[in-house]
Length: 144
Image 1 (cartoon, rainbow, N blue to C red):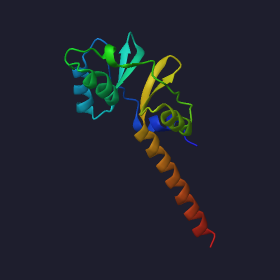
Image 2: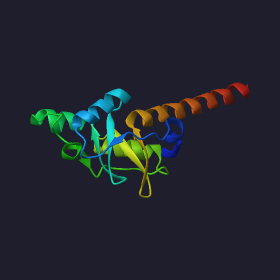
Image 3: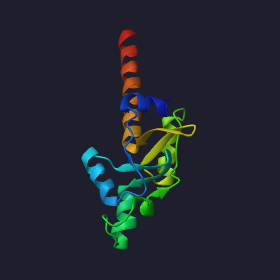
Image 4: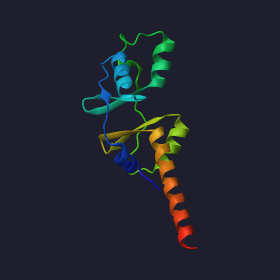
């Protein structure tokens, strides 16, 4: 069974973030440029929150706010659910499904070390299943 650290080894540990005083517009520019669905919000080198496409739709657009006049701190999700590098991929999938979230910051103690998405988790599960299937096919072929 895979662990979060396995996903980060493949994906890398690049973290895209902004401070809570930056505007939603700034965040959207980064998200478009980097093709991201979420952006971490960091204040004083600590995880303050996460800003997602869902936050944009529900907390900004539907409330009639303007992205250039609204700070990330006003609309970010504070205290996001986090995981550790030692958590299993199955645990992450359960957390995401049960809490209706698509992104999980990865914390090693108090240090933010990465961000995984539902796409990362699904890719890992598919790759793991493919490896098992290939191994079984190889075993069956060799035993003939």
